[in-house]
Length: 326
Image 1: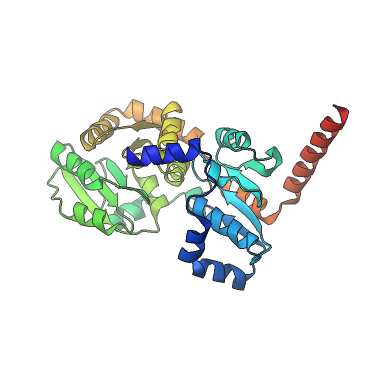
Image 2: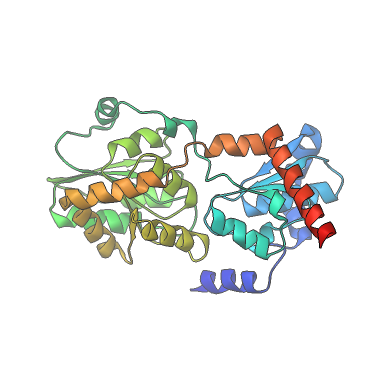
């Protein structure tokens, strides 16, 4: 509730900063030093504070690099809008409309989708993945992830599966969240339920392609990855703001289910596992959201793709002509 009030107030006030400029300069001296020493031609900012840092570096004369902002959620906020940002790569038309409403010129916004790792564009050998992680055939696989920010109750969700007595194999990826990993490690799964706890892994694409259902917080990148794998998603613990918007979009598309509380999360997941027809329908809806070309589109935008430059020039020319004719 506190974060929701904070985020909504920041949007309502049209805040231009997540923190005072002096605090960012004081707290991130190595970032500014690295920018000055590296002398980049372009800075790609995939997080709102990174956008602020890049713009501050420009204003301080530390760099003349182009700044390209990549918004990896289905909701933005006014802090993203800076005159120094030359281009915005956004997830969908709704984010484009948000930026336009806050004054961003239309010719600076490109709908690219959310960029993902190239490994998600390749088919991985499920037999190899199963063997590596001790996953057996014939028993459903639930991939449990907690996302990269905010509180997570992965252990409570996993406990719900363990207590269900329903045959299921849980692969829980805690990433670098040591607290979540400790909580998961304390659980004791007994047949017909199995639980494998992993830390940071590089093979998320292979695990998603092996799973029957993904249970996760609704981060934009994670949901984009799931769509590329046509993987049904059950979501929990959405942070107010972008994560809630991400979840709402997925639910509206029929590609996932939003839940409240660990028991509801486990119950919704088990319901999907029991109903193969529903699971296939949700999987098909997820596949329709996939944007495998997103990373390449962002790269072209960042590198100043000539075709994009021509589109921008044409848009500007039409705008000028319209004003002249008017």
